[in-house]
Image (tube, rainbow, N blue to C red):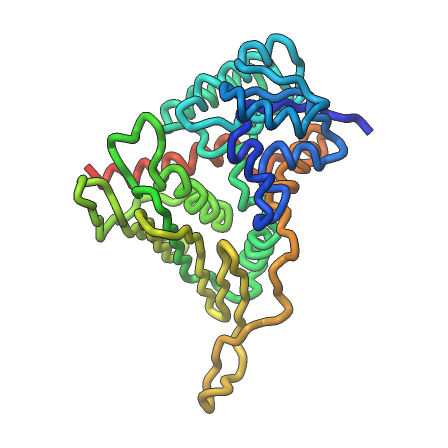
Length: 337
């Protein structure tokens, strides 16, 4: 079988260091996921931080290292190039990678700081015919894929409500961080809106934004966002910042059941004769559905890249998917003005 050569730009948390977190399901970073796939040979890494790059090379002695993206691109010829850097470098870095004509770019979320920059990436991607996969990792998780299958096959009846919550230590939004993307609405909120897009199969539009809570610096600390889809599914999203913990969860209500899914949780409840009230039905846990021992959220992403290059699959998380998440978030931001 053909082996694909890969290079990674950015050896920080998501690029490398989270692969050393023993509490996370592994692989949990791009380097570990690329190395774990037998069809991929990791040939190069790049980072402007020499100390971090030296640590990366120690664990990847088979690969060459570069302190600048231009050097990596001029001296290597990888099939897959992963861009795992801060959001403010996504535009310039990804354009350079695209112009080097790899067979596939894996771009860390969010696509860019804003949709204007994302459209520039898309224009170049289309013009050069170089596809881009965006790492909205929950699309590749077995648990979320199970939920999507339940929805599409009406296993629990009609979907009536999705309630999602994101709780983060970062501010939800700060105008002063527009140039860095260091606020949770875009940094982690892109995951929340994207997974709802994935489950619904459509983009959220026309938000009703309420309960905007600001901190003493006039930044957004909390906000609630509601939608009603064309087929009457109610969507309610809460973004809350400056918390002393991280939380990400969804509750899906159906006409005959309920699903709870998120970081550290997965349960399915179905309609059964009530043990509490005569003549009523209650929702009780369905033990047929159990959380996957390994969701495969990172390894499945890399395998999708391999299957795509083999010509056997389409990309599960496309550049357009990533752009749609940005557009949805920008429609929310308009209400902060």
